[in-house]
Length: 191
Image (cartoon, rainbow, N blue to C red):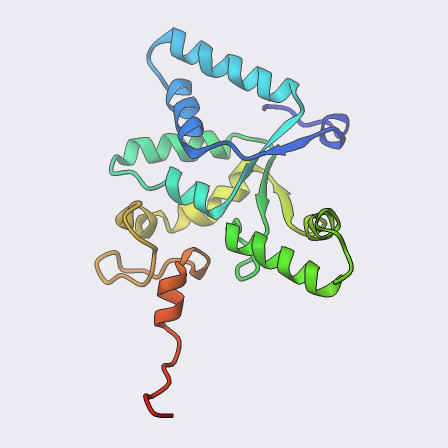
């Protein structure tokens, strides 16, 4: 995944790897063992030759950058930033961030409402037209790098929100439905 040509981009397919698989590739890329580094390099060559472009969501980045070891986080930043081209879901709330699965679903719902007669495959195709953005790996991870401590501070334990211990507010795109619901005004009983 080192060079991007117009021909390879036209034939590309977006691939969202499971975060655990991506963690293993990154770990092997930075391993002290030559066999592990070669395994990661072989994966990279196969991935690139298949015409694949790494697709990341907000959830991928949150998982990758939620680690107690700062050196591990730095390796993950370095790996992702080294990619010349990364795809991400467009965020509907914050243009500079990768979007979440919720953004993807919102685009699908909007496409279905705008085109009520479309079959599901048509809704999918309509939503996909504006669903993804292509950027360098560096530009994709930069917003997270600038505020990675709130992400790290929370880890994978629960949804991000304003946290006095971390000293910053995390992006709203990662909030869970229960947390969003908790912020809504409540009707008084009897009204």
